[in-house]
Image (cartoon, rainbow, N blue to C red; front, side, top):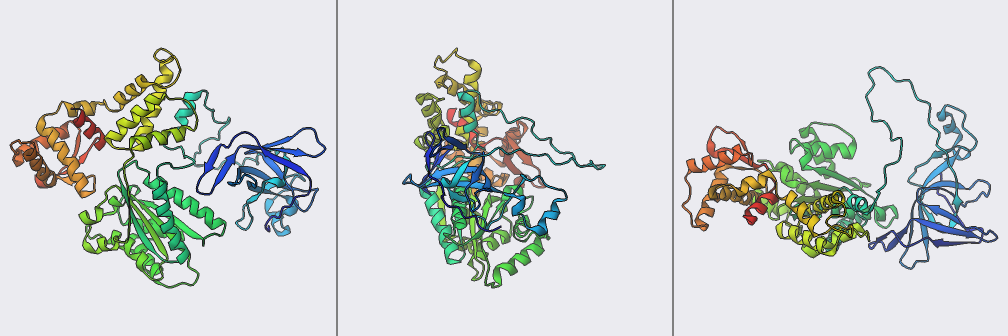
Length: 539
């Protein structure tokens, strides 16, 4: 099916309904939900909304094109209207050699889903003729074979829409809800965008190390950069590239990174050693039409090995002359290369670095406000309180969103007893904060002895020094002795330190993994670092 060509034929007047529902500051676009069409000679206006099936003006007046309306937007001038569509084809548009694949006689007015990269899905909004009714015919249900795989039944009714302001606010504040824009990260977005764009345009390779504490928007910013670059590639503004993402937390072994990269590149399965050899050959051999690959490696901390060969290869491949590989790595520790990597890996990472600072209370307040998007569900003092509390502790935007969602639930269940306005107030936020930071673990930390609290502080200090979430007793014990001297206390000996460690393990504040030697006992936290710091700070 060739590229659709649309042109204006009748005098129609198009205008937007209501205000914009979204804005893309990077592309300078404003999005709308519906549009009115006035036809000369007709008294009533036609309205088309997102999700409707519409007719698009084409060469044949008797058979206009059929599509589903996905997006409506205008540029910064407000004059040009653009529609993003999902095309459907009539049976007469299907080639003769493919009609027999249907296996039945189609209805004369039947249309079929159509998807082809050569077919432009963005057209002039002023070529829309109007809405059309489309009925969906269910295919004949095949006979279920024996030992069939069970499946989740399809939804019989549409998902329930929010019934009040609090429910709508709770849905918008969910961490899985994708926002239309990422506030407070404009500079980081631009730096990463310029880095990847320049590498794709020049056809070269490179690597960037992105660091920052959890919940500061690292992964979300990179995904937004890739989405914007993919839109530019679809519009032929930059060369096409291929995006691949791996996550160290989803792997049982660091060498599985080779397997996942190869499988996503070539759909080929291999052992880790064989996959590493194939990738080495791919990124070393020249190819005239090789497409640039952008690789995102999330949770880089978990890909550390004793020989560091996985990390070294990930940062060595982009330096190859014919690789055309751009690697973006994300980790929680800013100085990870200097702390756990040998010099050869650290030298590879000396190219480009990006550090995401924790959110301030004003930034957290702006993030919540932008997510709510003019939904008045919180009092101003309540938003400021939760933003200041989280910013003082960690600056984690995800925890801030969780507290706000819990506050809306408390407000909804309490009714109008505490707040006559029906909005989330200070009392609801304080109750949510108490629930979030008043678990049994926090109570146990507050009731622990001075030596036990110092040992927990030593565990966090050592985790941050290593850039990992695990350490040996010997490493933590050195930190513990240093903290004792700072606090003016008598440093504990090894046996006393082991007793403190095992007592914390029996309370399940620490997870202990046995070893032949007690000094090499492996220690992990069974509670988040934020909760430990909150309990110690409050204490």
